[in-house]
Amino acid sequence: MNKAVLFCSYKLKQDASIPDFLRAVEKLTTHTSKQKGCISYNLLVENETYADVSTWETMGDLKNFIKSGGPKDLAEKFYSFIDFESCKTHFYEIVL
Image 1 (cartoon, rainbow, N blue to C red):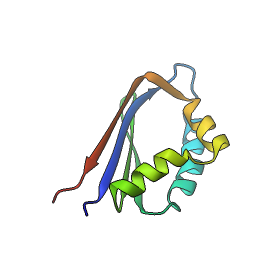
Image 2: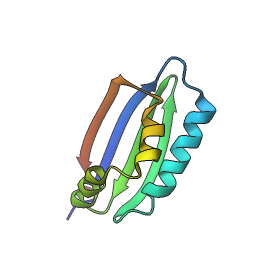
Image 3: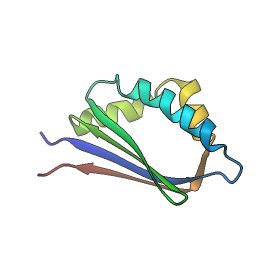
């Protein structure tokens, strides 16, 4: 079975505090990294565009994580910074 990658790119809302956003990411990442099948999580940035890249043992593990939604308070805090009109999400399988 192939490993899976979740790639989400987005911009922050105009009034978002970057230090507060990074604290929210850190809290959510701590939870995410403990989930079944999670191999790694990275936050990338170029100019004003951020990207979350997480790698999972299987696509099933990734989809189960997405379905669970994580702790509501952590997810809501994280999403409160995101400009959803800029959000692009892609699911990939690693082939090599």
